Length: 140
Image (cartoon, rainbow, N blue to C red; front, side, top):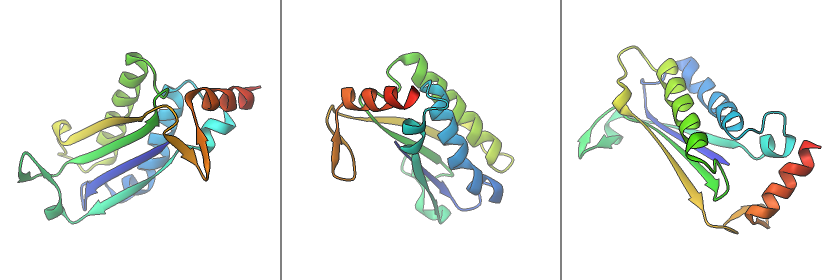
């Protein structure tokens, strides 16, 4: 379940650049109710992209926006409450890991869902039912 963070250089603290992905991963696992599930934990990962500040835009203008994009199969964070829990946690994590003065309206979080069967690891396609079965098996 890839998480992509894109931020202008200098907005995340140096520690923030190192800590943001592990903390967002933990927030996703918790919001999913999958703490301790080896299968689920193993398929959460991501990247941090630090760009020159002049490469980040919002509203057609250069702006110090930190973007967190979470890509999930269509069963991921399946309720409004679960999505809200992740968004709240992610916004708090970004706020903690940015330099002083970073404004909350400059933190954008979005969740993108793949259609059923549009999720794969290696050459294996997973439907929602297959993912649930694998996660359930790992929980036992």
